[in-house]
Amino acid sequence: MLPEVEKLLRVQHHDQKIKSLEKEIAGIPLEAEDIQERLVADGKALEEAKLALQQTEVAIKNLEIDVQTRKDSIAKLKVQQFETRKNEEFQKMGTEIENYESEITGLEDREIELMEAAEEQKNAFKTAREKYQEEETSVKEELEDLESLKKKLESDVEAETESRNKLAAGVDDDVLYNYDRLFKGKNGVAVVGLVDEVCQGCHMKVVKSTVVDVKAEKQIAHCENCGRILYWWTDAAVGKNMGDY
Ligand SMILES: [Zn+2]
Image (cartoon, rainbow, N blue to C red; front, side, top):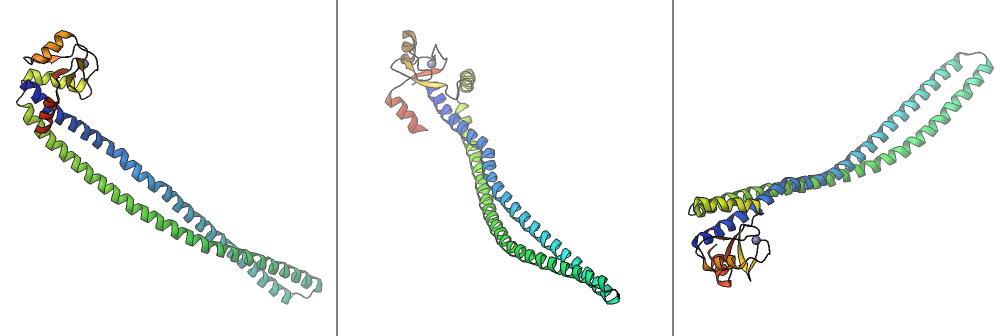
């Protein structure tokens, strides 16, 4: 293999790693969003449980006020009853008192029902809160793991870039410029093998003169279809390079 092509193949190996690491890093914010999203449903359930309990507690307070109002009215009526001398009025007030008392019984029955409901809602709220807190802890841990992964990937990129640049420093400037352009333009595959006269980049058969050029290994040869740099592919060629990476 041409030494220059061999060097490029190694540079490409690092560039491909960097590219894949960067892709992984770029996906992390979305992954973090997905993890945080899990808290939303539990948070909503917790809010709903809290609201239901609050509504019941307000309803109980209102019933207590209603009961007290009636108790106050009864007390007033009893004073008035005591003061009146008219029998008819006395009777009328007595009926009113009875009505209030019966209303109080109804209100108190309702209050007991609501108090029972509030007990259940308290338990439901507690369960929802525990579930939320558990999820919150697990989300926090996963986000921390993700942050560590990001740091590791970033340091991998740094290491790969360092190795890449060391290798690239040994490549002729024009050759490297051309390679970089191809790497960017051809989706991270700039140097490919020629297998059975077929370019492994675009999978097209190349012309005879190209086959001859590639096999001669005298100068850098390009696929006339896609422009990629070609090397003469043999098991030994690839094996040798892979071993060196
Ligand atoms: Zn090609």
